[in-house]
Length: 154
Image 1 (cartoon, rainbow, N blue to C red):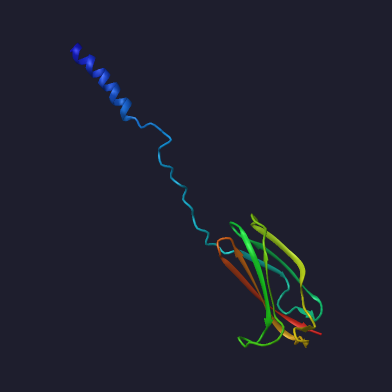
Image 2 (tube, rainbow, N blue to C red; image 1 turned 45 degrees about the horizontal axis):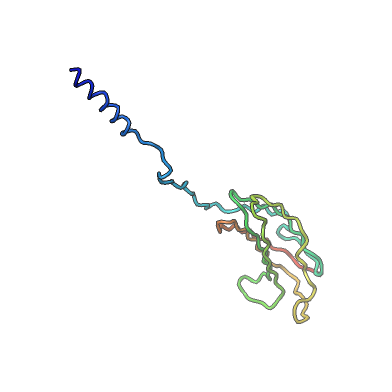
């Protein structure tokens, strides 16, 4: 029995030593799970409101709050004559603004959209209703849009 104990105890210790998993630098690193961003940004348009009148030759005031759950990328404003799908040669506006990296929210408040009295070729801008489409895009490519109708007048 003493001989068996002499062999069993060291054998048991070896078995425990080699059966325990040791941490090493060669273990594979499991990357974190990335959940795709599928949430659209949010546009809270303050000004202009639908029906607002803008006088030709002045600047259109744009005020809105943009937000996203991850990160904003840009916003775009497109203004065109309201003719329900009919293409016209009248005045139109389109511009995209890039948002600084890392922003989840942005308060927009500017007068950068000049409404001319004449446009290319010297033709006068037609008064009437114009559709204003605002699109906000986040860094994942999700888009939110809002639309208002503004009236251009002399």
